[in-house]
Amino acid sequence: MSLISVNNLSVAYGANTVLRNVGLELEPGEIVTIVGPNGSGKTSLLRAIIGATAPASGVVSLKPGLKIGYVPQRLHIDQTLPITVERFMRLTERVKAAVCTDALRAAGVPDLLKRQMSQLSGGQFQRVLLARALINRPDVLLLDEATQGLDQPGSAAFYQQIEEVRNATGCAVLMISHDLHVVMSASDRVICLNGHVCCEGTPAVVASAPEYRALFGAGTGGALALYRHEHDHDHTHHNEAAE
Image 1 (cartoon, rainbow, N blue to C red):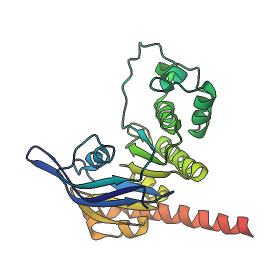
Image 2 (cartoon, helix red, strand yellow):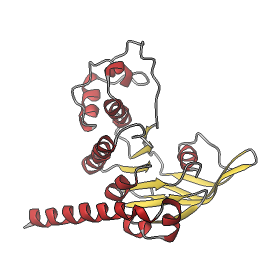
Image 3 (cartoon, rainbow, N blue to C red):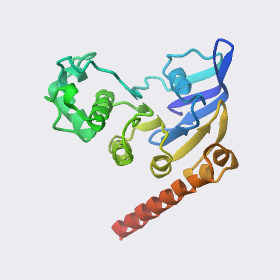
């Protein structure tokens, strides 16, 4: 059974229909990325999946007992508020400090437990949000443009950490990303959205689709080249390790 199944989903705000007849399946352990221009309905799709937005029509089905960890696009915290990372991570659930430390370690920032949230860099802040989403050992991680505001190296490092989390825990990942290069190197499948599903498939298939190129331009072939380079490198490395 799929972890998440979306069938013929339509979402409207008043007279404005932002999603029409969208279908999506998320299987255990896979990384699926949703791309699309501004206003294409990407965030509305995630909100419908977590139940924050009611569909105009269609059905969203979650596997019974599914645990979801959500990493938002941004979170504003008053910089004058004295709150440590540990206290922030325990705001909604009383978990032990060791559990917080384990989650921070999985997010790649094991030494931040006693730091003030106001002292964190943008990249550290996003990793703390990731750690908070990992506390309950979710079956699925949902990320809504979690690297917005980070530079290219910071984004790449963050999504590499996501891959490591998936490999270590087996959780599935469904994420929205505006960074096409990251999409091509970090995803098992890509869904191109523009109010409806324009195209979907492996990164190589989507990057060569006319609908994708119409939205993002032929220059995104560079993203595909990066994907192929990293994929081939990983494959070669894997073969060498096997020998």
